[in-house]
Every structure is written in C-alpha cells, then in structure tokens.
Amino acid sequence: MSGSTIIIVILMVVYALAVLGIGQYANKKTGLGRSEYYVAGGGLGTITIFFTYLATYISTYGFIGLSAVYFSWGIEWLWFESMFYPTLIVPLTIFFGLRFYKLGKMHGYVTNADLIAHRLDSEGPVRVWVGLVMIVFPSIFYVGIQLIAMGAILSGLTGGEISHTFVVLFFAVVMVAYIILGGMRSVAYTDVFQGITMLLIIAVSIALVYANFGGFGEMFRLAGASEHAWIFERTLPPQYFYPALIMVGIVWGGLIPHLWVRFYAANSIKGVYAAGTAAGVGGALMYALMPLIIGTALAAYYPSVPEVAVTEQFVSMMFSDWMGPVLTAVLMFGLVAAGKSTADAILLNLSSILQVDILEKTLKVDWPEKRLDLAARLMCVAVIALASIGAFAPGLPIVSVAITLIWSSYSVLLIPVVIMLFWKRANKYGAMTGLVSGFVSLILFLYVIWPEWPHNPFYLWEGTLPVAIGIVTMVVVSLLTPAPSKEVLESFYGKEGA
Amino acid sequence: MAEYSKDYEKVSLELVPFDRFILWYCTIGTVLFLLFFNYMTTFEGIWIAGMPKSAFFVVVVGFVNIAIALVSRHGYKSHYDKILK
Image (cartoon, rainbow over all chains, first blue to last red; front, side):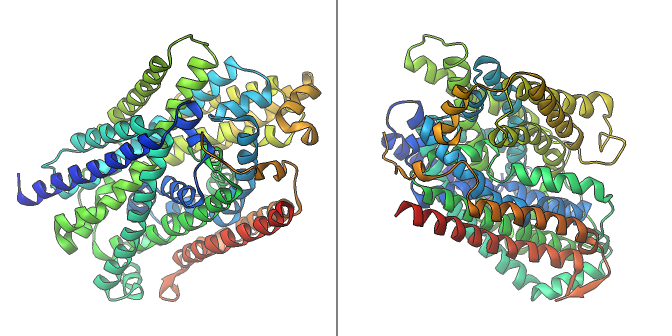
C-alpha cells in the first residue's frame, strides 16, 4: 500500500470519528419518543434547518454525477437537471413547505404516510403501499447512487488500492452508526458540519479550475475548440424534456420524502423560509454552476475520454492530476459529505416508515420500546445492505439511474399527493387506485413492456405515462365513488380549512 | 420534547395572495421556458461571454435560482409577518 493510500485511509478514519462524535453529541440531546428521534420533536432551529436542507439537497449527484455525465454524454443531461429549478422547484419549496409545516405541527406527524393516511382516512393499506413500496423502492437506489459516487471518488484516488467495495461498506457502516446514535438530530447536526464542508469545497474547486485554465473564458474556449465540442449540443427530442420539466419540477419543490419531513422538524416558520433559501442556493451551486464548471473543465482538460472503471471517477482523476491524491482526497471529503448527508436522511426516513407506519400503526405490535427501536435500526441496516449490493458493481452513470428510475418513482407517488392536498373531492379509493396504477405501470413499462430506453415508443421521459395513468385513475375513481365525509376533511384540514 | 413556536396556527392551507402569485409565476415561467427551450439549448459555437448558448443559459438558471429563492422568502415573510404581529 502506497504512502498516499495510507494517508487517505487515516483521513477516512478521522472523518468517520468526527461524524460519530457529532452523532454522540446528538444522542445526548435527543429525548425519548418517536417524534424526538425522527423529527427532533419539531425543535430544529433556523440555521440547522438551512444546513440540513442544503446538505440533504446537495448530493454527490450534482458535483460528481452531473459533471461526469455532462462530460461524457453532453450538456443536455445537465439541462435535464437544472432547467426546472427557477420555474418550479425553488418557488414551490416554501409553498409546499408551509403546508407540511402546519399539518405536521397540527397533527404531530412523524412520517410521510402519516399525512397521506390521515388525509385519506385509511390506515394499513395506505401505509404499507406508500411507505414500504413507493418510498422504500426508489430510496434503495437513491442511497445506492450516493455510495457508488463515494466509492468512485476514494477508490479512484488510490488507484484501486482501496477497493470500491471497501469504501462503500465503510461509509455504509459509519452512516448507520450515527443514525442509530441520534436520529434526526444526529443527521441534522452532521449536516451542518457537512454543509459547511461542502461550501468550502465548492469555493476551493472554483479557485482551482480558474487557476488551472487561467480563467473560465479560456476553459470554455478550450472545451469548445476540442473534439468534445459536441457536448454543447442537444440530441434528445424536446418531448423527453417537457414532461420532466413539469413533473420532476413539482415533486422536487419540497415534496421528496426525506426533504418533506424536514418541515415537520422545523421549530418555527423561519425554518420553512430557510429551507426555501437552501433550495435556491443548492440548486444554483450544485445543479447548475458547479457541474457546468467542472464538466467543462473535464472537456477542456481531457482531449479524449479517459478509461475509467466508473464514470464518476473523472472528477477526482482530474483534481488528482492537479494537486496529487492526498490533497485531492482532503477536497473530496466534502463530496463524500454531500453523499452521506443525502443518504443518511433517506435512511432515517426509511427507519421511521418501518417503526411507525408498519410496526406501530399497521401491525399494531405490542412490543417493548427497545425492541421497536431495534427493529427500526435493523431496517436501516437492511436498506443500506441492499443499496450497497447494488453499489458494488455499478452499471450505469448515477444520473441515468436517477432520471430513469428514481425521479419517475417519486413522481408517481408525489403528483397524486399534490392533488389530494388541494382537491378535497379526492378520496381513498381514487387515491389508492391512482397510486397503485401509477407505480405498477411504471414497473411494467421499465422492465416488461418496453425494457429498452426510453421505455416508451414516443420518446417521452420515463415517468410521463405512469404519472398520467395515476392521475387519470385517481380522478375518475374518486368521482365515481363517495366523496370524503365532512368529518374526515375537518379532521385533516381543521374546521376552517374543510 | 423540544419547544416550538405556535406560528403554524396562522399559516393558511388555503391559497393566500402570495401563493397565487407563486402559482402564476410557475405557470407563466414554465410556459415561457418550454417555448424558449429549443433556443436556449441549441449550439451555435461560442455565443456570449466566451460560452456557447447552451452553457450560458445554465449560468443564467443558476443565478435566477438564488433570485427567486430570495423573492419567494421575502414575499412569504412579508405576508406572515403582518399576520403574526
């Protein structure tokens, strides 16, 4: 093992100890009860909410994944991820966040399915389908792509002396450990640390790129004059982008399950404003400016696409050429933080689904507190084990996995949630048939009917048809079956809102 | 149990005037975006500030994000500050 690899291993251990220390601090601050563990008792302050929202928002996906896919597949994939921010995601974050904040406080919600089950006045089937199927399924892949990026960064820097599998397992264990220690507080406090680290790496990276090319103008000139100039063109038909612009834009406006529960955790309305600001800052930095700068730098720096085991290794390779593996590793820990802060939020959310939605509210098990806690922690371990298995041998760039599968899965769940929030005629029959038909059609289209990309004959984004099927089914079945009673609506919206 | 503010009681689930503004902005913004999408994403060599057009508009999107976040924050804060006084 080379000297630089030993230093990188030491850095990994120091980093792990730092976040575990924060987790232990959070453990001491966390009181008893589900609400305390999963949403910090609704007691997180404005600054903490800002950083936890920012850090959860910013994942390795933006910096590493989008830069790499822009460099290797073209700028249209960066467009796919950045175009819906200014018109939908950023303005809708506070719009939806205020509603989740109010409803969460009014009714003491802990999970996403708490709200949906209450609105639909239906417990078991809603919680099982929404929680255990529609949230867990995409979340496993979402955690997996974060692990892939972490493995690519550090394994690539050591030239494979630390294996991709080892890095994935190492960070999987660290994440589970600090989530078990302190729940939402642990995740939020480590997010403050990780959020600051990420902002630092962004500043340093911009300075490095600027210094290496002698200015951004020269970098763009080199990229535009290289054989890589094709990356600035769009090749996909517009209909692939249009439905995604609307559907993905709406669901990322505060509705993504692990972001949604952050609004339950805010201790005042200022936390909701802070989350909205974080969405704007995160969107600007990680889904527009940084991938544009880093991806263009890759195109300007590499005359032809270098051989890599995993696409996401391009970025750490370039930085390593500029400043050596050890300094690059220090820099890249900011990105590891980005991946961890997203994955840990998802894991905590999944843990709450098993404990609250399944064991307590659906199966109504009469277990002692400790056994319930243990089962929820085991859920974390099971999910991260599944995600790790997928991450050991990545097949596609993480951006491709997200756009095709994860964003589509979230859309078939969350677009119907928007409808049930604002359309009081929506009932449990309509909502459930809409949710089931949307998700089942997505799986059938992706894996059975049209297994080849783009999974439909019309060149539409993969989520388009399943979301349309879900919406139509929900509306038609709701109109054909009895409307929700006044009592049900009053219980959810309050007397004035119903 | 942590302490939290009771300000949520004043938050409306119905559409307040600034909600309507946001929804109109989203609708008009999205339609304009769709109309100009082809224009913004086509490549015609170096276009402005040393950048191709498709790259330049990514920079624009980035800065507009921050502007919209601040406008949205200010609008909601002004609305609820008046109610919460």
